[in-house]
Length: 229
Image (cartoon, rainbow, N blue to C red; front, top):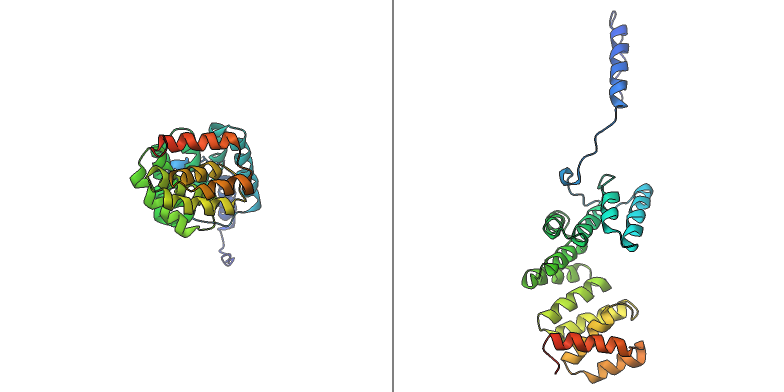
């Protein structure tokens, strides 16, 4: 509620001058705040103009321009969790893994969302810190059980941990959630090879048209994991 207007004799001119000065201050250009100095936001309500900005960032990512995407992202305030998730992802994509880890750790500590746990787990995995990554990816799976990406990444980490039977469950779930598309196909085939699940491989071939090239890739990964001659 605006303050009551109280007339005090002799102060009218001074108030007009003061109002003019304050008005001038209000229109002065503001110095942008660096991303590192902004507090992490857990806000999930995205305003339309924010979505337009995020869509532009995503377009740059899709076009293979992560450096430009990060610059574009940081040209506006990081007002929502979506902004911060993208910042962490883009820091990782541009090789700044320690900064990405710090960003996702802040998100985990403050937002406790599946996306934040997923981001931190994947950042740790990219640093070959598998044992550190697994608990975060498992927590992400618990918080976002219907996310195909989370299930696939957790399953892949389980493969790296030589836990192929557990990996197969996560990867089969991811395959069905993602309508049989994406890199999960090769990951699941690898899990089936490591567990000698011939029926599973036949299902991939017959129901999902699993191809020769995909089979070769999965076999190569299985060999790298020490499960195939």
